[in-house]
Image 1: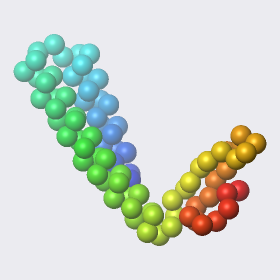
Image 2: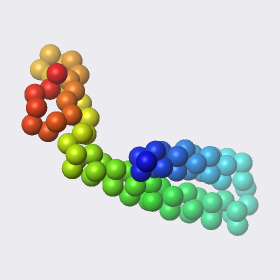
Image 3: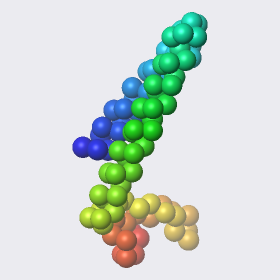
Image 4: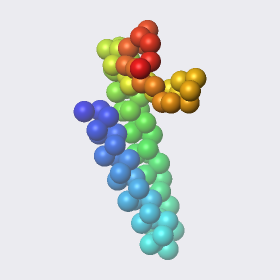
Length: 83
């Protein structure tokens, strides 16, 4: 739920900033909008970090790396070998 909330917040940030930067010319309107988007970004980052910490505690983080052949490998458990 936290990760989805963070994603939803980030999607709204894109709408806010694109409107503020490209459609609005009044500084009284676009400056507070961009500042609000920045605050939303900080809150979304906190939620995403909390979600990641929960996944790390449960040892369910998807870890993707590159093998020696250059092929992408994946694993979820910290101490398992990549597949």
